[in-house]
Image 1 (spheres, rainbow, N blue to C red):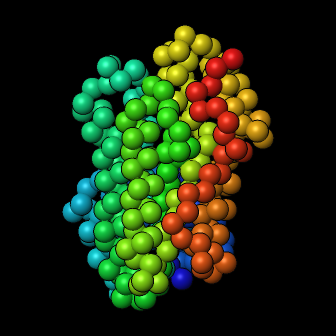
Image 2: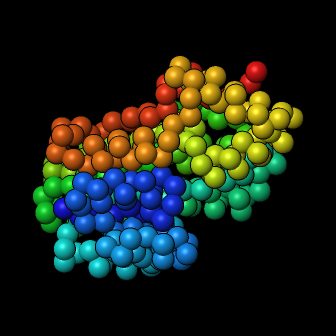
Image 3: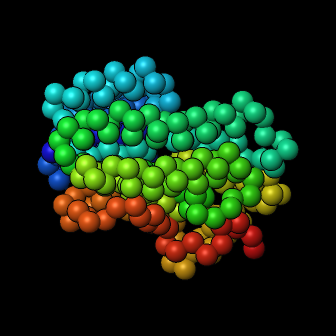
Length: 249
C-alpha cells in the first residue's frame, strides 16, 4: 500500500507520514525544505517539490504511476498574512491561496488518473476549522480552506464511481511552530499578549485544549484505511470542538 503526503517533511504532514509508516505503508512525501527531507527516514521516498508548482508535481506523480497510489494526503499549506483585509497585499493573498488551494488541486489532478487505473483510492485533504467558520484577520487562509472543502466534496462526487473516496480534515489549533507564529501575529494585530491569545484559543474549545499533529495523523490514517471504505465527502473536524473561532477574553 502506497501513500503520498505533500508537505511531509515537518509538522502535520510528517506526523501523517510517521503514522502510515508505522502501519506498514510505503511512504512517499514532498516538501520544499531540503534539510527536513534529508532528516526523514531512508525508507521514505522524498521529493523536493513546491506543491503549487505544476511541473514539479507532475514529475512527482509520474514516478508513482508504475507502483500505483492508494492514498493521497494533500496537506501542503501556509498560514498566510495576519491582517485586516484592507491591509492584505494582493501578492500575499495570491501566495497563500496558491499553496493551500492550488497545491491541493494539483495533487488531486495528478493522483486521480493513477487511482482510476486501479479502481480504488482515497484522497485526504487538510482543510482547517477556518474552512468551517469565518476567521477574522486571516482572510486569504480562510478563503483557501473553505475552497478546499468545495473541491473535496466535488471530487467525492466526481471520483466516487471509480472507487475513489475524498474527505477533508479540519484541524483546530495545533501545537507547533506554525501555530506559535500565528499567535504571535494575532497578539500584535489584536493588541493582546500572546498568553491571552493562547488562552482564548483553548477557551474556545469544549475540550479546553489545543490538538497535536498526532491527533490529525491518526484521523488521516483512518480515512485512508479500509475501515473508512464507505466514508466519503465528509468534513471532519479534529479540534476539540471549536466553539469560538475568534479568541477573545
